[in-house]
Amino acid sequence: MIQINIAAPSRVLPKMLRNETHRLLLTSVGFSGLLLMARMVYTGTHSFAFLVWNLFLAAVPYFFSSRLLQRPAWIESPWKFPLVFFGWLAFIPNSFYMLTDLFHLFDSSAVPLWYDLLLIVSFAWNALLLGILSVRHMEKIVAARWPGLPGWVFLYPVMALNALGVYIGRYLRYNSWDVVSNPLGLAMDIVHIVRHPLYYKQAWGMIGAFSFFLVIMYTTIKRLSKAGL
Image 1 (cartoon, rainbow, N blue to C red):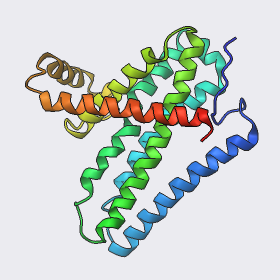
Image 2 (image 1 turned 90 degrees about the vertical axis):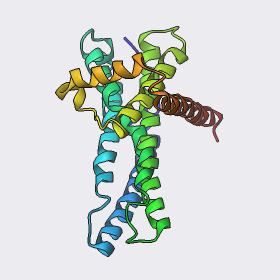
Image 3 (image 1 turned 45 degrees about the horizontal axis):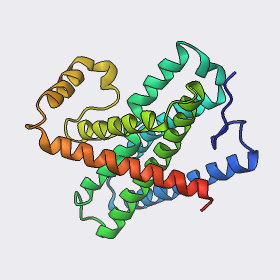
Image 4 (image 1 turned 30 degrees about the vertical axis):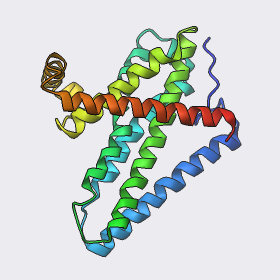
């Protein structure tokens, strides 16, 4: 039987710590929601309502990884684990994609620029928290399923795929649903990018830079957590 000990919303954690983590997340998300509601009331528009949907998509992989932690038998299953894992892999880029929502900062001048900056950053922060927690969940799960596997074998490819997902989501306008609804078109565009790296040098520049940044960010937070800071 696989045993996993990790900070997650499941019975493997002390109740107090579990509730504290949820309270912090809900407080942060609630603050973002209040900012958005105030903006909508003030401007009478729904310009940034898409942030709610993007944050929901960012929470999907957290739900997947949490369910796996709550059901160790699924981790040992030869078909349930791959199914949940690939579903998680398809959605996890959404957690880091919200960084690029800063591109919308100058879309409107209906409120002060600092307000929209705070609004977008707060939503992106929540998405990053969910993404980092979810990657940590899955890193622990993979380590428990394949003891002795170096952590970087999981982390580096996942962060590279996240960076690729951010690029194709922002610039090629694909989303996680296209893995099912348009797999051929998605695969062909990815193959085209891989086969013509010089033509897509700016794309590879972004993917490489984002991969490096995500690894640094995740590793830093992980080390700080272990240090008790």
